[in-house]
Image 1 (tube, rainbow, N blue to C red):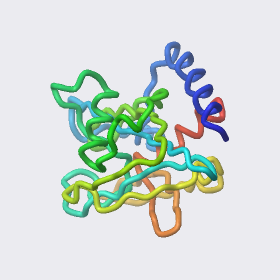
Image 2 (cartoon, rainbow, N blue to C red; image 1 turned 135 degrees about the vertical axis):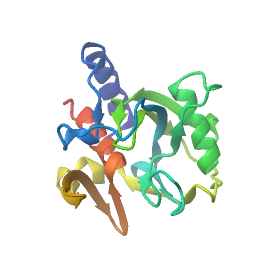
Image 3 (cartoon, helix red, strand yellow; image 1 turned 90 degrees about the horizontal axis):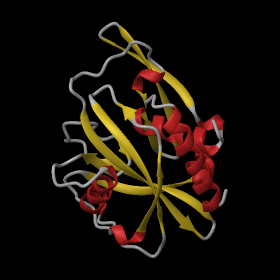
Length: 203
């Protein structure tokens, strides 16, 4: 898939979004599940698509183990909105600069996925951006343990979208897992990646 195909798919999705304002979220696989806090906290993440010579990759982070929210999980760079942010795109780019040191001049935003509601109470706007090498990164070692890239083709293969479940306090929760090498991509990040694939397939 070429980046022009991604842009076209996001443009078509933007038109569909204007007619359908439903949001995605952890409740997609768990009907009736409610967020843990109300009101929801606005947040944004960047979905960085890196244009490598051998194809598009998706840049992801592994969060440090001591964080209060989503500790140790695989995630996109991003975080909660701040009052000085001009919009969701500004939040995503600012947080990306702070977390992984990727300067916004290397990022061309090309669209958004569906808003995603997490069980932990975040209303997340996933902003899709094209990242053109060469670029430098500098990790905030308080929040980010490491960064890595996964070929987009891996996510486009539906066989890699595994549904799993666990039981906590007598409640069974279902979620996506996208196992890539030694990385366990699950939860909200996996849900957003499945949403990306749905959009690229025109669903």
